[in-house]
Structures are given as structure tokens and as C-alpha cells.
Length: 439
Image 1 (tube, helix red, strand yellow):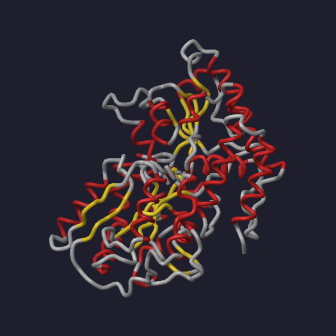
Image 2: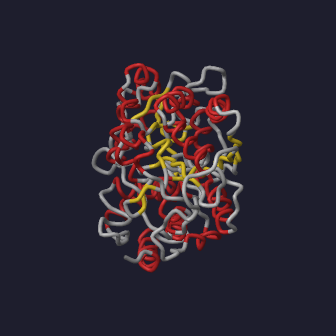
Image 3: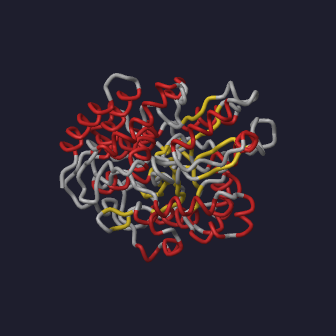
């Protein structure tokens, strides 16, 4: 999920890759548990006519084509895109405010995968009958789970996301090194590339480290890739551990040694993409959407034909991605819910998902598309990406996600900016999350 787009990303995101990024501290209290089980607050899926689609800024440029395909076939039920800000934090804030005021200005909501529980529990989106959405049976199971709350369906997965390591293949080849599978290998590869005349001015690595949802994703991936967890399978936070510390210290050490440039503390998805695309980075963590943009041969990318992708590295082997992506849900306060449901089915169809992959390189939710020979030729990363998504770890599935992610961002940012030692930041985070996450 790319968070700038929602990523995602996100993002997330960001993402997700969140993911990928989402929630600033100022809006952290918006996601309180209503004490309900969620439900169809807006009634049955009835009513036909024009609808509004609320979504993050479309940096891919293809959403217009997707919506135009629907509008050409449904002249009496046209979709108007309400493009929200690039920041996922701001997107969610506007959607929450719209729901809290019970406004009908948004019909279909483009939700980051981690927003499902909050929106469902607060009855801001309607429960969907699973038998009316046949595309679910063709989707990667992990993506369908992101659209559920308490085993009930409240959204439909449209795009998925897994973090990828983009790297300058031309420079690694010249330095005689392979794509790294561990953090130590990545550091060694950077040193060899920087020893080359054309590599000495490049920065080693960057991800998404601004205080937004993308930081939650990058922190979670570092912790998971060191063998730790943010929230365990028992639903309890578990960040005050040696494994979590090893993950966080990978990032803090990167900043202190200069392997991660100081400017990266301001990077969201797009800032990082531009730095990589302009030829300033050897390695870059981002979502699949970057592949199409970085590969453009119209002069907008200085590295077209010079890069490749690999799984994220980890402490002792391949790393673990955070599960990103976006789901479409129907606002509980929307008019024309029947049209909204049909629009979601249209966008979730294999035809629309294929068209979107071909134009944007965003990760689909249809499992079969990852194995399609023509798409694999165009996007070689699809096979490793599918594996990444299938084993990716979700961010905490909690109703108070806004508060939880804000706490994670605060702790990680404090450590990255030397406001707190990593160990103290994690101890404080454990205390904070324990107060926010209750079973």
C-alpha cells in the first residue's frame, strides 16, 4: 500500500507499505472503539444513481482511466472522484470527519488496509454480503482478511502491497556483487559500489522515515526482519525485546553512520522514489508502484534500465515485508449504495486489475495475475512479490489504530532523531501500547 497515494502506497503506503504509510498524533483520538460489533449502519445496499469515490491523490495517473471505463458504461450512475490530499494521515482525517458528521458526500471510500477495524467498529462503513462479491474467491487470502472485522466483510481488496528492495543493478554488477539478502550484505555492497568512480557520491539506502504511517511500516519491517514482533499473536504488544531493539538499531545506526542520508528523515514514498529515480541512492525500500515510474524512458527517470528489485533484507536472511494495500468500502451514510457496490465489483474484476497492473505496476489482489506469463515478462518482480505478500506481516489489527500507529511513529522518530536512545524508546512504547491495546 502506498500511503502518499492512499500506497502506499502508502504512503501505506505507505502502506502499504502502509503504509504505506497514516495518522498524526493530532488525530490519534479519532479511532476510539464504539463498543459495537460494527454493522450495516446505512441499511441495505439500495439506491442507484451518481456516486462519489473518496481516494488519496492519484500519483499513478491511471485512476482517471479506470473510472472513465465505468462511466462510459454507466452514464446514469457516474462516479465522481473526490481526490483527497497526498498524505494518508490527511486522507483518513477527512474520511473520519465526514463519517462523524454523518455526511453523504463520500459514497465509496478507498481505505488503507489497516483502517478496516476502526471504520467497521464505529459503523462508518456497511457490512457487505460476501456472496455478492465473487472476486474474493480469486484473491490472495491474506488480502481478503484485511477487509474483514470480527470475521465479517466490510470492504473489498482492490490492490495489495509488499515492500521491495530497489537497487542499482548496473552498479552492483560493475562492483561484482549480488543483490543482498541481509543488512550486513547490503552494507558491504554499498561500500563496494561507493568505491567506484560513479558511485562515490551516492547514498547507500533510504526508506520512509518521516513521522507518518510509512514510518510505522519501516519500523515494523525492521523489527519483523530481526525476528521480533510489534504485537504478538496473542494480541499483546511485545516491542521491549532484544529482537525489536536489533531492528530499530539497524535504522538508527544507518542514520548515525551516514549510510542513510540525513535528508531521509523527511522522506515519504514520493520523496524517496524521486531520490532513487534521480540516481542518488544505491538501495531503496518502496512499494511496487515505483517500478513503472522508475522504468519510464521519457526522460523522467535517470535510472531506466539500470535497476532491479529483490526481497527486503533481514538480520540473518530475507526480511519480512509489512502487508499493505487498499480496500474499497461503502460509507454507511452514502446514497445509491447499490451503485456503489457494483462500482466496487467492477474495480475488483480481473479485467480492471489487469489494466491497472499494466499501467501502474501496483500489486493486484487476484492471485492468478501474479502467474500470468505476459505480466511476468513486463514486471519481473511479480513472482517474488506474491511470495512477499503471502508471508507479509500485518500491522496491529486494532480498533484504536490511529492511537497505536501515532505511538509507534513517535517512538521510532524519537530514536531516529536521537531524542531518545533506542532501548528507552522501545520501553516507553511498550508501556504506551499496553495502555492502548486491550483484549
